[in-house]
Image 1 (cartoon, rainbow, N blue to C red):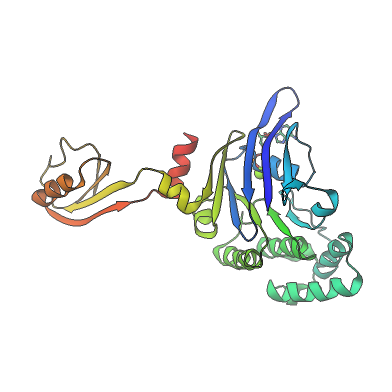
Image 2: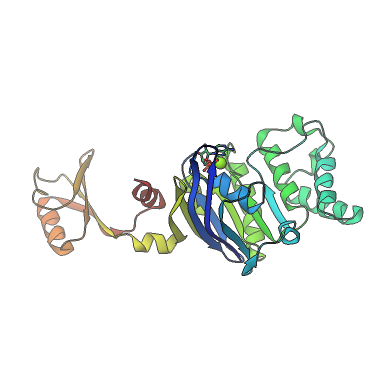
Length: 292
Ligand SMILES: Nc1ncnc2c1ncn2[C@@H]1O[C@H](COP(=O)(O)OP(=O)(O)O)[C@@H](O)[C@H]1O
Ligand SMILES: [Mg+2]
């Protein structure tokens, strides 16, 4: 379990990048770290990896301050992609394996399994620079995974990838999470995070504005009633506290709270009720609310 507590970081002359960032990611969880550009995601990840030091706060691993040796067991995909463009794919992966202290035989074994798993087997002899962005990203992931990390921390691993590459990468991450590894990745693509993650943390201007499982966050927000009425009499929703919009010949009414049965009666009198139900907000809506 990784725990981040009260991180604060100021750059230069008073540029506050982090203003109290806390969250926890237990074993086996896929945690999406979301926020707009400049919110503080990269800074937080760099502090976990000790690329930067925090002004305040701490990073705990299994309840105790994270040590150098433990950090070496982590897999990290930095925002500034650190591949050597001229090196061949296989050499590249091996190089990082050796950096993590693996012996030659272990490196070869792990690399062979990884390139197979990531669909890179045919490219091991090719220079990194000859690969598509999607394939370079797969190499980047292989580099982060070579030493069988105990935690994965990935900065925008999905950015710039096509849907097929996203799915391939996501599957590998899910596999690791199922194997008990906490997986943390940052993203500004909320639909993706909602689809892939067990839990999310939302950061805005250096502060955590929400964190929890996707279900918890969706349940915590007020539920809304959604009513769709076709060929409705104009003005039928007057006096109902809600938002009415038009979608062709359909009226769509969204109401937060109130007497749902009264709304149903009015809708039924007004026209043909096509849909009537309670909906939970999406992550996108929670995010908009949280950062507003
Ligand atoms: N080395 C730095 N010097 C000055 N400001 C920085 C530096 N790194 C990040 N920042 C600022 O800190 C804030 C958070 O940045 P960052 O963590 O990169 O956000 P994110 O990854 O969420 O886009 C931004 O306002 C950014 O401009
Ligand atoms: Mg970033």
